[in-house]
Length: 197
Image 1 (cartoon, rainbow, N blue to C red):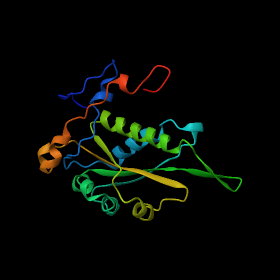
Image 2 (cartoon, rainbow, N blue to C red; image 1 turned 30 degrees about the vertical axis):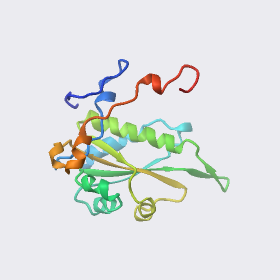
Image 3 (cartoon, rainbow, N blue to C red; image 1 turned 180 degrees about the horizontal axis):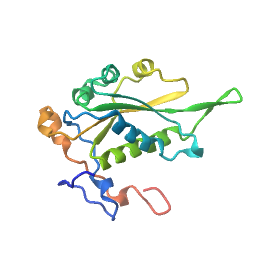
Image 4 (cartoon, one colour; image 1 turned 135 degrees about the vertical axis):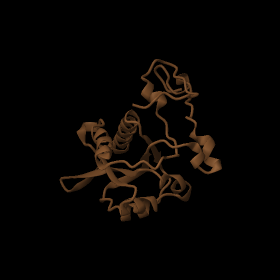
């Protein structure tokens, strides 16, 4: 369990602290993540809800120091690689966008939604165990599809950097201010009674 921290965040309603305390820093310590610990995070992602139990989320992972980690890190946009290659692990999340039924490719309409649920499950499990998880959309998707053997009919979404939270001072100057937990719009700006706002 993570220790409470000073945060500018304040919920509009009484939600569990994990939803407000979880955020996505970029500074990591050099602490390693064991294979067993990483499997716990992926296990949480595996149990995420999915439409009609199709379970479309897929994961490619590696831990720092492994050749596979360097291969994934090389796919990141330079602005992300700058800090993410210091993470203890990288996890690429994709989803099965279509299935073949009776020889005909059929779209799975909720595949991306379900992959998002898997990401959130991983992020919350990481937070509960004292890790941070930061998802990034900035990576070379065509190169990743080839390098990671993405099966046909699948779609890439994000690369997640996982590790122990490190001091902001280890980051370049321009990234340090972004280590503060970001705020959210008031609930009244995003949820409407009977209609969208």
